[in-house]
Amino acid sequence: MTRVKRGNVARKRRKQVLNLASGFRGSSSRLFRTAQQQTMKALSYSYRDRQQKKREFCGLWVTRLNAAARLYGLNYTNFRHNLKKAGIQLNRKV
Amino acid sequence: MSHHGLIRGVQSLEGLRLRLVDAKGEVVGRLASQIAIILQGKDKPTFCSNKDDGDVVVVVNAAEAELTGRKWDQKLYRWHTGYPGGLKERTAKEMAEKKPDYVLRQAVLGMLPKNNLRRSMARKLRIYAGERHDFEQHPDLVPFQMPPRKLREKGDLFELPPGFEAFNPQAYQKRYGHRLNRQEQQQQQPQAAAAAATAAAQQPGGSRS
Image 1 (spheres, helix red, strand yellow):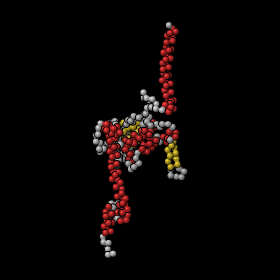
Image 2 (cartoon, rainbow over the protein chains, first blue to last red; image 1 turned 90 degrees about the horizontal axis):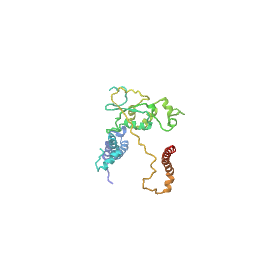
Image 3 (cartoon, rainbow over the protein chains, first blue to last red; image 1 turned 90 degrees about the vertical axis):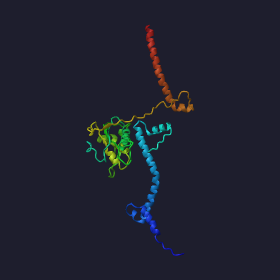
Image 4 (cartoon, rainbow over the protein chains, first blue to last red; image 1 turned 120 degrees about the horizontal axis):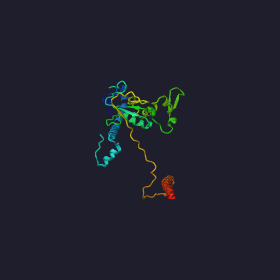
């Protein structure tokens, strides 16, 4: 085998992780090993929450529509039902 | 605003209404769920779960709120004082005697979300046992009406629509027979009473003539 000097390969890899970990508390933004653990957690949370964000906003919009409909004497279920009966009216829930 | 000193511990009171709720004759839990909705601000189309935008709720006559069944004697409030052997339990009646607003307040607090906004929501809830309250001078009092209760009509569900026969007559009779018989008796009684009344009216008329 030829001799291989390791160069800056490891440093680049760790620097990438530490950049992702900027703003973390304490040693999690300074030391590579703790930073890597917290970065892995952070990335998996962000993946999960990209899906959850859509759900949560939908729920918020439904709550707001419910409140607004009740000002007119309806509730959300009747509101949706009558919208459906009246034809496909686009309720983008925003 | 005149109530600045009366409501502290809340972020801001601008744009919030002051709802006056009369608890006289209302069932505690049902009233508490409506109050919790108002306190969270869920009756507004601008609801935000990270912001405390609920109206202030002033409850009056809390001592006249009702519990159904035997709950005044049977419902127990339990808490631990932290000392060994310090599990205390008191009935709803006892708690109401010592603190008239306790039952309603615990009911509402239990229905609020358990998060960081809970304290400021609870701070907006004012319960008074009697008729007087500290906000009478406030210009913006809005009375609150409980929504009508959805009471299910019980009793006619076993009747078949006209022209329909029971698919399984034995099971139908077994299940609803006693109520059908009772209904027939009730129908027969007014008819019998009417027949008896007409007969009685005819007889004296007939005997006199």
